[in-house]
Structure formats: C-alpha cells, structure tokens
Image 1 (cartoon, rainbow, N blue to C red):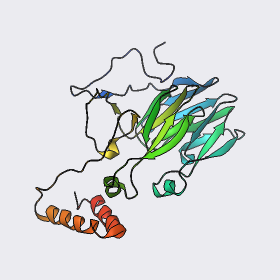
Image 2: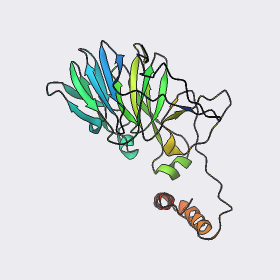
Image 3: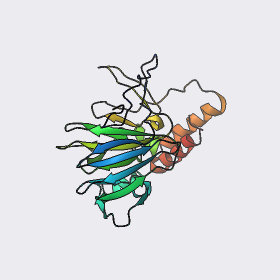
Image 4: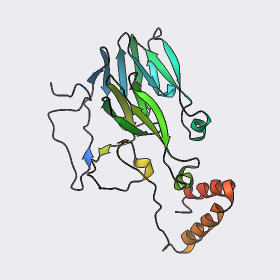
Length: 256
C-alpha cells in the first residue's frame, strides 16, 4: 500500500517543505482511489484539469454545486439541499441550493479549470473553513453552514463581505474534495504565529485558526496612485454608493 486510504496522499515520498515552512500538498497520483462511507470510492484523475469520479454505494450520498458535476448514471437519483442564510447567500455570491446525489451509481466532478484536488478526511469534532466555490464535493455525513469574516474592511474588499463555507461532522467521519487553482501549499501555524496572505490565495483552514483583514499602508504613494487613494477615501464617505464606487476603483487597480 503506497497511498493513504483516506486522503490518497502518496506514502513513499518525502514532504517538500520550504525554508520558510510552507509544505507543498502531496501531489496525488493519477487514478488514486479513496474510500468513504459504506463502501463508496473516489477515483482521481490528476491531469491538468483534474476530475473526481465516484462510485457511490447504496445508502451513501454526496452534495455539491450543480455546475461542478460532469456526468452521472441516468438512474442515479438526485435531490436538492436547502442552504442556511437566505438572501444573505445571494448577496454574498454563494449558491442558494446544493445538489445531492444518492447511491448506488456513478458520477464525476470537475471545476473545468487547471489546478489540483485536495482530499480532506473530516473526523468528529473537526471543523474546516473553506473559501467560497472551492468545494468540489462533500460526503453526506458532513454538515454544512457558512460564516462571514467580521469587520467593515471586508466590505471594501468584497462588496457585501467575505464568507467562508464551514464543514464539520458530528458522528461518522466524512470527506471533502476541494479544487485549488494552481499549486496548493499548506502551513501549520504554531501558537501565536501569524502570516499574511492575499485573500484570493486562501483555500481552507482549521476553525481554530483566526483570520482578520488588514489594509496595506500605501501612504507613501505618489502621483496618480496617491490621487487615486485620496479619491477612494472621499468616496468612502458617501454611503453605499460611495462604497460601491470605491470597490470598483480597487478592482481596477486605482486605489491600491
């Protein structure tokens, strides 16, 4: 046995860790199989555009954003799962419902984009916070909700704020499969240790890891950049329309 039966990671290769402590997520071998539930399996195609093909056992289920499904057996039953949050989900650009497939049968998933798949087993008592739209699939044993990163600064960055998908299990173990755009690197933080990262580079974290939004001081900017920053500050004092206009400036690279 050269791969982990729970996450598919190769067991006969050493971890690749940078001098600064970043660990490259184990590159899953092509056609690696991972088991979960009552006998279900996930087979991973780890090409440039990765694919996860499932063989669902009777009584098992998985849920997912509908557009992530490539194909399924024509007689594989499907339902929908309502998600918590109501209108806040629409404002936060999160899916309003999730599709659910029930075994027995076969189906496959892909984000239709280059990158890598990360298989995360979840044991009872564990909670993971995941970037929105990174989920490829979750087994039926995994509970789902969401949370918002607190603070007014998140509104400047993402309009209605920044949200996490939150996954946990109460009794039986479950599994998540995430899609990361490009290479995926992991970091284990010691007590009191902090790192800074660009929000778009975040994929997932343990719920015990706190996260806050910081702004970068560009007070030394000159010329057009300084004028753009001053204009953004003025717009910020004009209520909701000002915030919306400021967000557009930031996205265009004018305000920072």
